[in-house]
Length: 511
Image (cartoon, rainbow, N blue to C red; front, side, top):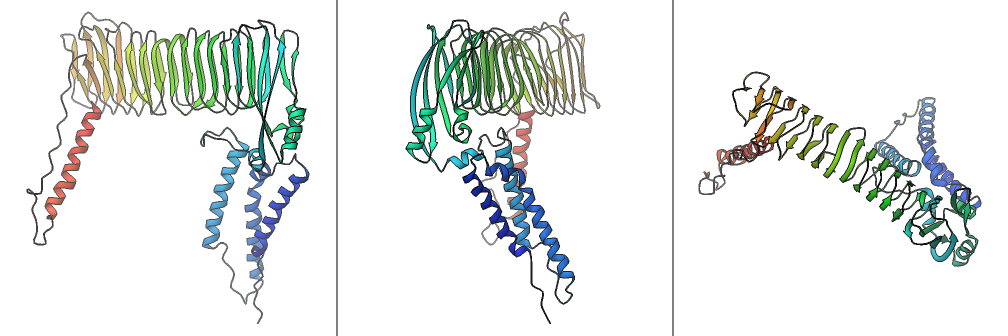
């Protein structure tokens, strides 16, 4: 009896290796081909053809009843399938979506192919007349760029070229072909380079530009990859970068930044700041006018000394502050604000909020988080707080006068203030605090679901939470005949003592 043993799966991986090798061989004859981009886009075909080969093998086995049909997938093949899915997804994210923030770095097929080449550096300088008050446009920059305002009537440039090539002769030929040109186009100047005319569309060339320009110069810089640093210029600045940090300091005028990665630092601006896109850390401070931030940023966000309106918009948070005289620090799960002179509004979720030294109205809507508010001066404007599944604590000076409507659904309330016009109800499903303190004044409205509400006087010390009992020492434990602690002693030591510690921590957190 013949035994059917032919399986298409046995040659599947051989064909896969041939196909991948053919793609990279194609690049050697055509530099415009990007193998990793092809693989990142079409890797799911690998699974499709693998599945078809398995299906054909299975159907062929059905025509040979003398053999046992092979399993559709073995255990090792399941592991291989999962590995292909993970690696394919990672390659697609890195190559096709280079600004993906989950990794914090960027690699594409050009960089992978260029790592096998040598790197050579060359320097050149040039200078061209540039009228004061002009706009300078720099497009398609690949590499870091610095612009410094100076007492000059020209653009003075120092360029460091980094070129990847097979040998020094090829790199030198590319460097000799590289040219810069400052073109006057009716009111603005365009700094152009012929980098794109070089092999591989100029992707093997990185330019580190250091520019000195007249102090009264507006700049518009677009960088494919590289940091942007602008300092000491008087004019509007428009900065675009895909993969790099942005730093703008000592600017007079509007600063507009659009980015898809990296950190942002803006300080000492006589004007407004607009930032949108996505990235990591942000520091913006000492701005005389407004600051607007729109996008997704996953690092540490710091804002301080903003003269007018500060606005922040993201998927989770919408915030507006007027006259941020102090400092605002924000992370993924928390926001700390110290010093705001004007009205403050925020709507967010899963973000603990702490506000100290506020002098105007507050409007807060938060969920699944703690809210802590404290002011060193009696409130003069309304306070509204809506909290879902989170505690609210408000601390004010003892001489404060206000009206209050506070209720906690399925929670508890506490109030250090007292008076004939105040009613505190601690029993029932909706404990509340209602009435007037002192001569009345601004309205305080607080509502919380499943969270405590505490209205405290500044300077009062909350009672200390009970300390957990000390665990029994060895002399207090009972020992059995084998010389080991008894079960009852171990139960007390591990369960009761642990419970007491957790309860003490819960009380401290609730305070």
